[in-house]
Figure: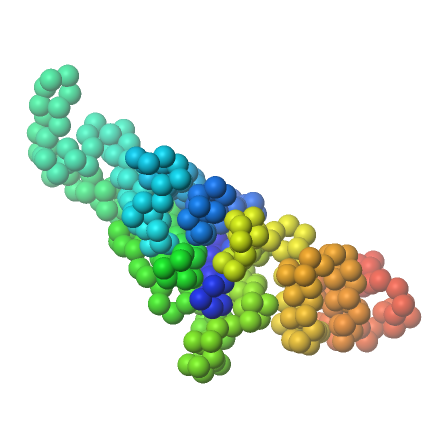
Length: 372
């Protein structure tokens, strides 16, 4: 299912994070899910001075179709009547985009239900509501109570099919910036057909939402009302989002892999610089920096400085990684943490004779007896 979380830093900026894990029908584990996508292409984003990112959890193909159809509708509205540079009243805010996404979500969900219902029973949900369907100019009443009950369960997502349950349990978060409202976020729920405005400035959805939500909630609980109104430092905010993702993946199934990041800064002048995607090497290293701090091997101030250098100052990942080990309280301890050793076991390993005798060398699994 995956995990998606966002945090509003201030009126002009914020970030969304997501992991890469997805379980196909709850059996096969995959670590290549891509959950976050911009809903505006570069031309539209620059013309409207708006940025919107869609973060989806649940069934990947369902979310992917929503993204594609939403983009098509946005492009159509943007080009309507006055040509492609018409801004129009129906496409000015993040809320407008979120409403389009919800509408497409409902259409796609209904189409998938109708295809399944047609395959099993030969009629659609509209036919079920009417009480009959037509085939080759012949009318057939839907009279069997057993068929009607099963079809109604199918339409409501109550049938035992894992495939449909995954689709109904899909959720989405929409996060972005517009000129009228600044940075805002929305929660989309296809199961209950609702769109919710996020007034708290943060959201956590997906498999690990209880862990990531608790982390973000605790972070905000430390802030006074004045501090929350003034906003948060962007590096500190990204740190908290990554930490929430790590704890989520450590605590829940269907959450794991790299914690990828989308950072929105509306003070920049173009889509290329306003909307930044951080993944692969930089995302991996950022996660290692935060994990080192969570394990107590790196001071919080050092972790924040390294993240700033890596993510916002275009730092060289190799140099940042080298500085990470230099600033660690114990290089060997850090290496073991990043290799996945149990934290309480590390002191015993570090005090072993084999490690003491090779303290100037990198630890190998052979020297440690293969303990993992």
